Image (cartoon, rainbow, N blue to C red; front, top):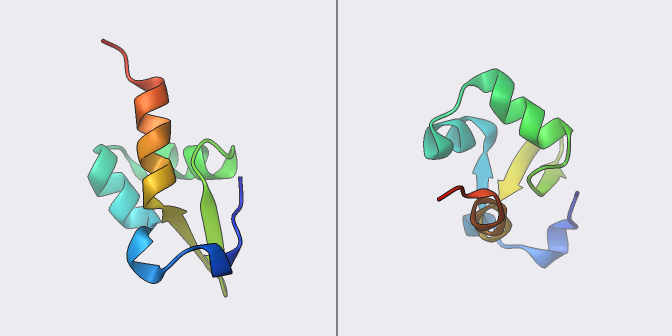
Length: 65
C-alpha cells in the first residue's frame, strides 16, 4: 500500500536498509515485503521509505506466539 507524502512527517519514515536492521532480515526479504505491499511505503523522488507506525501494525498482525 503506497501512502501520500502529505500524510506523514519524515521522522515517521525509515529506509529499506533501516527496515532490514529493524526486522533482522536480509535485503531480498525487505524488498519482497515492499514490492508485495506487505508494508506501507511512500516514494520521495527515487527513494522508497517505510511508514513506521503502519509497519508496527504489520508486525502485530503477523506475530506468531
